Image 1 (tube, rainbow, N blue to C red):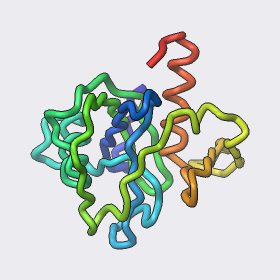
Image 2 (cartoon, one colour):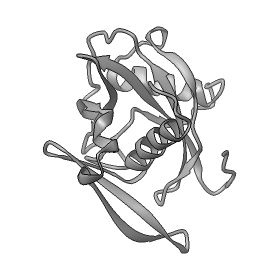
Image 3 (cartoon, rainbow, N blue to C red):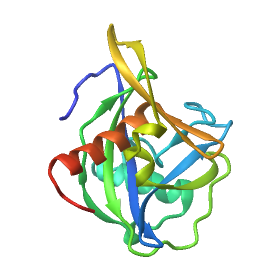
Length: 175
């Protein structure tokens, strides 16, 4: 579902999928304390649309390469998920990509404090899930939280991960 709201800024994030020791993972980042938005939060690599970007996929791939050094050529784009509006003024379009072989990654320290390899099973284990009701855009919404080691994954990143995996499960499509 594509959202339209001219008051919100468009952004693209890449949800990079890869296998490690026969377990599917997402690559995520812990944002630095120097970035303008979402300081210290766990997120997918990505960012705001640039006027030079051909489309939202190009945005997600460009931002990922800038933030963690994952070359665009290493990502097989599988498709886009539904847009997500954030209370911080963005419409995020998640782009799912498959990475067959992870190269050495280097975090751009101004933007990324740490690169995380998060097993998808985290978002399927209801015992590791916590949900709170919050007021957003004038209505009550569910906000999900997942503990991953010393990190807390929540908000749009948790919702995107959870929704993606639940859609796969409902469609009976294995990874």
